[in-house]
Image (cartoon, rainbow, N blue to C red):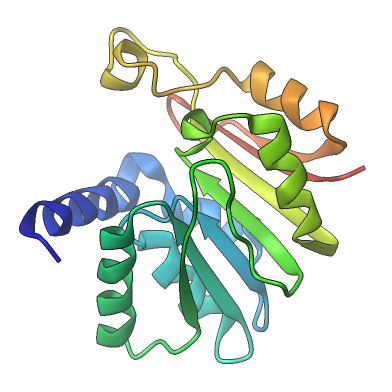
Length: 191
C-alpha cells in the first residue's frame, strides 16, 4: 500500500471519529445487533466498518465496499490488527456496488451519495441486496454552511434530492435525524 493512501485512509477515519461527526450517536440510532449483515458502501478508511464488525460479532458480517483497492487493503490491515474475521472487502465499480449474494440488514452510505453516477439505477441495485426488513442509511453533506470545502467543490447533495430519488425507486423514509451539523441523516426502507 502506498503511503499517500495510508495517510488519506487515516484522514477519513479521523474525520469520521471527530466529535462533530457524532459517530456514537449515529451507531446508537441504527441499533446494530449481533448477527446483522451490513454493507458499508464507500467504506474509505473503514472507521464504520471496524465499529460495525465489533458490534455484529462472529455471527454477523460486514462488507466493506469501495472503488479504491488501496483503501480496501488498509481496511484488511485494520481488521487483522483488531482480530476481526467477519469483514469482507469488495472492490466495486463506480456504477455497481457488487453486493454480496446474502441479503443485508443494513446498507450504509456516508458521504458517498454525491459520488454515485446514475443514482436511480444504483439505488435499485441496492434494494435487491436488502433483506425483508432491511434499511438503507444515508448520511450526506447537505451544502449548508458558509463556503466550506464540500460546498465549493460540489461534494454534497441537498436532502430533498436524496429523498426524491429514493422515493422514485420505491423507498420511504423510516427515520430522519438533524443532529449532525451540515449533514443529512436519513434511514430508508422499501415501500
